[in-house]
Each structure stands twice: as structure tokens, then as C-alpha cells.
Length: 266
Image 1 (cartoon, rainbow, N blue to C red):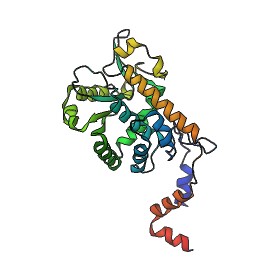
Image 2: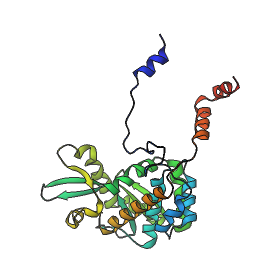
Image 3: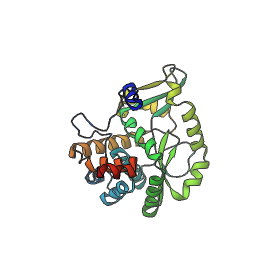
Image 4: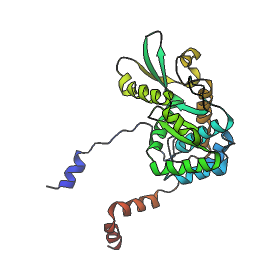
């Protein structure tokens, strides 16, 4: 019996939502960041600038376009003074919730809406939060340049805030209640009972629904539309990816170690 052969025979192809590549090998909006993206993103985030956006990309190991675009957008929001209007928050911050959590008066319960634009930021920002070393480097850069940092409120939102206000933010009722209730009423909870919805653009959410949210208003709507337009233009400007050859070779040597050298010699 061939144990390895049996292993492969038992495997089944996996399907993945939001793939990074199209069938023809071109990148999707979920795909890799390429250096030319910095120029495009800078058109939408001029206060951040092409040079700094390029540095942001350089600090991450194999960054995705939406990771870099998300950091650039949050930084641009803070620098241009497009601050979030949140009850009880007396300091400046730019928070982009990763969905709209609101109270439905019609249904008398908590609901959550995943829009097309918020979902573009949701997955990449969750992955970015797991890049511990990369986030440390990014925040050192943003602190040195602008005195701000990018932090997460669980998987609920991404926030640009002054470094001097970090402790105030983390101790605030808003941050802790948003993280607590956002996690309690997360998508995996609300999917039961018809309380989780999607299939809509953020531009089509009625103002009355936004008013029933603690932290999603007109500034956040504008931010998401700009972020999406910038990312889409970057994809259109450069669709093709580079050669995968050297990445595969580096991965082979990393995965096989000394065995890779032996195989190369044989």
C-alpha cells in the first residue's frame, strides 16, 4: 500500500470565495499588490502620497492590494479630518466598521449588513491584523510620519487614531462595547434567524439605517466608496502578475530544507 498515494486519492478540491486570481492568471481585486498600485492609490489618498504608500507595501511580506489600500484610506481619512462621529467619543478617530451593525426598529432586534464595499475591506483587514510583525512596522512608520496608528476593534472595525490617544481609545466605553457587542452579535450568530444580510452597495443603505448604527455614517460611506474606486482602478491599470517561478523555488527550498539541495543536485 502506498500511504502517500492513498493520501492524495482521499483529497478533494477545495473551493475558495474571492480568489486572488482569475482563470486566465490575471489578479482580481483580492489579489496581490504590485508596485504600480502606489501611484494609483496616491491619486485617491494624496495626503498619504505615493512614496509612503510604496513604503507601506514594502513593509508587508507579499502584501495584497486591499491591505495596502485599506491602510492608505484610513490614514487619508485621519489626515484630511474626515473623523467618525460617535456618541461619547471626545477624541479624533477615523473608524471604518467592517459591516453595518444596527438596531432594526421594524424587527425589534440587532441586524448586520455586509455591503459589497465593506466586504472588500473585511477579509484583508482581518488578515492584516494577524501580521503582527508587519503591523508593528506599519504603525512605527505612521507614528513617525503623522503621529497616528492603525488598530483593530476585534473583527468589527479598523481605526486610525493618534498614538497619544491609544490608551484613551482602548479604555473607552465605545471601543469595549463595540468590540463586545460586535463579537456577541457576529455574523456566525446572526446568520441564524434572518438577521444577517448582504447583496447591497453601501451607497444604497438608507440614512435611517445608518442612524440606527453607533458608528456608520456619511463619512464612512464616502470612505468606502473611495477605497473601492481606488482599488478597482489599480486592478484595471495593471492586471497581469509577474512570474511565479522564483516564488515557487523559494517555497520549495523553505519547505524541504536540505532535501531541496539534494534534489537539485540529482
